[in-house]
Image 1: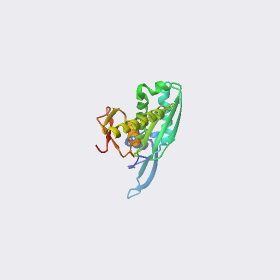
Image 2 (image 1 turned 120 degrees about the horizontal axis):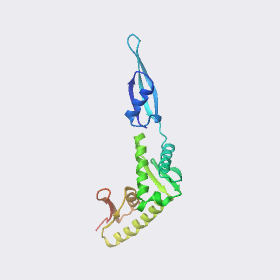
Image 3 (image 1 turned 180 degrees about the horizontal axis):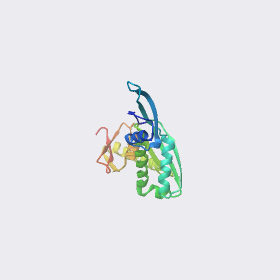
Image 4 (image 1 turned 180 degrees about the vertical axis):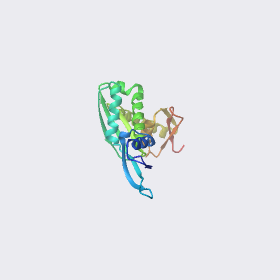
Length: 206
């Protein structure tokens, strides 16, 4: 988690507020520890070397944040988190209004995912791969993309003609790249500029 060290004249609320401003997080998430105590030559005045550490539970506090978003949207839902390998976290939401939370082509869901990812980044310098799924939408979408990737790759391998897929977000492009990573006859590349990036499936040898 994020941390800083600084010199302070006292351990009080002003010191806590200073640390919060420097770390750009709410003071409720900060723990202060005196690392060193300094005295003046005459011993009349003391200052402290203070370490401020962000105290943030990625799973628990992120779920609480998601629940706050859902309350603001007036959506009742159950939120769970599924940690994965290499700091991947999938937040699973089962709501009474899943279609509203997903939005057209998953756009609302993607926006919620960006919000929680940015929220986590406020508290830690570590990189987390964050996914949010509502009612199994992304799991189903992943399955559809893998079928599309396989079918298209077979066509490309047979015809030796490159195929450009429709525009996709970073998660969807990653699904395509991962699915075809071990194929010898085809290769994949992302092209274009956000938000209009897409995947091109090309023959390895023409």
